[in-house]
Length: 267
Image (cartoon, rainbow, N blue to C red; front, side):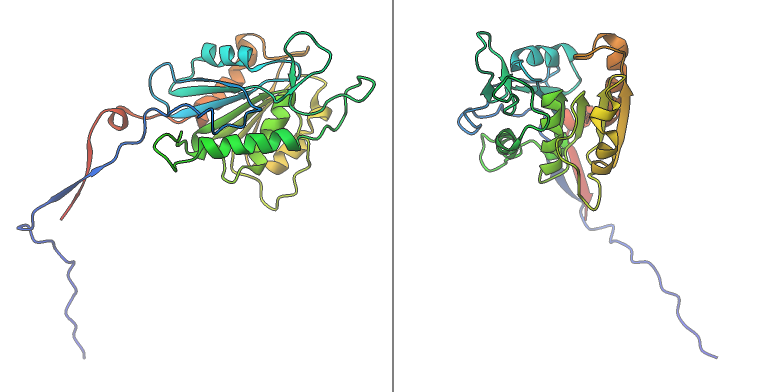
């Protein structure tokens, strides 16, 4: 009959002094995009978070015939907690119009009719370059956003560009919110992206929006159905579903991350 000595858990020597190692706090503010690093074709307005803590960056892409200015005002009026705003203007001016009106892609044929499948490649490459700059950490003046801190919002044609940008981003983004903007390509990925998506559409837009394509492209798709009509969201009721979605995906830094000193304790 054999006997064995039971093993005992190792114990630390109480005489060994404790070592305190400070844990660096996350950034609470980010530098604005550098004009020299952003493609010159893209005008933009950057607004830091109104509460002084930049945990998220909401990137706004306007629709056909608009500019970035109204969407910058929209981002300011939303006043999302700990969220900076970057409103970007499309690179192409619509010809033959006196007022400032821009488009993300060549949208009209020679007779002035809207194209059903415009090519987003030029603008998409510009936005990918912007995204690369936003997430760069290479210099002290880099914006240094994490991809998961970046949340895209696009209306109509800008929504289509936002979707294609999320699909082609090298890393998953914080979220994607689309208002009446269908995908321009049909997803062929083996696995859907983890970037959470919220798709707003109005009655009668279901077929145009091709919701099945969004569900093939993104792992989580929240549908928000608006009222009859057209155009951007109107009133608190239509915004409610999107605000609920943002409450689930936007990051929040606690007081200890913003102000306190945190240490790792070891021997």
